Image (cartoon, helix red, strand yellow):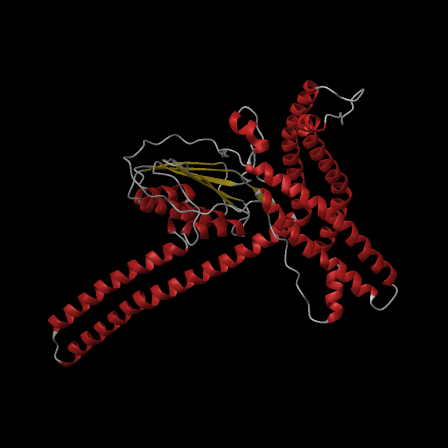
Length: 465
């Protein structure tokens, strides 16, 4: 679960580049998907000494009132949960030896998914977004459906949450109601005493003094104020428990990420193959056809009239087309496996930096040479990041730092552009993040408004294998 907090750097800062003149623009990049089940926003700060006015007003802020509403709703639902679990459990237990007993139990497990959706929706009242668990995959055949329902881990986890919720939130909800009512009575106690003239609160003996009732009223206000913090705390703990039991497990989350990454990689591979096919068809093939036709015409001129001048001109044109074709083939080959990598990742990245339109400082520190797959992936990551820097960032200089050992390869690309990177879909970096996720790699972004921007790529040793 991620609570609001200032962003922290997860890498050692690179040497600061000189700031360019004021320019606008930025690289649109994706962020890595959160690994925690929930992301909660618009909640009071949890760290003291940072924002005192907001901290002191937190128990009466809108977020606290939403926490009040949330706690009361889930407390009422706790009573409903008890009735549901008792009735459904009793019916399943009584019918377990009959024909409908097993299907009824399967229906009970599947009902947990409905409760799952309800509590995940309620969590949005306090700004929490609990990720949905994997959908139920309905197999073919009634017997298979019943079997799948009985073994549905999401349904069982949801029923477990209902049980825990009912046991804990029923007394907590009762205590909260008592606390709110008692605080309200204390607050209005001076008015009640003045109107009725009769003491209705007893401490050691019945209270019959306006001054004491005023003190009790102030105590009621303070208690209601403190109850705001209690509501916030209860709602936070409840959301965390709900996220742990109602959201996807780490394994389910990992499977979903890999499926999404695999789909992205498949689409990216198809697009790359289509681009290679188009380049070969529209460029290389067309030029080779032109060369063949020119040579055929030259052969005709030599055979029929011995027109060597015309033949020489045709051969010269064919030679020029052949050189252009070879250049296109070299570019195509470079896009598949850059020849510069034959000398290692360091020289290859220096070559990329030399071709970049803005100055790029390169530092490479590798204790061991990465595998071919890791080198290739790292090369194209740097190429794509430098291309984005030169096209979109408005930077006047950039720096590439490469460090690696047997455990991982880390690449930091920094520019002194305008910063302010925002999440966007369809950018080249979106595909880059998906390809890295497919091999357990990471893409990390630090881009405050005004710059500088630092994009970090972490490639594991098994990438490309």
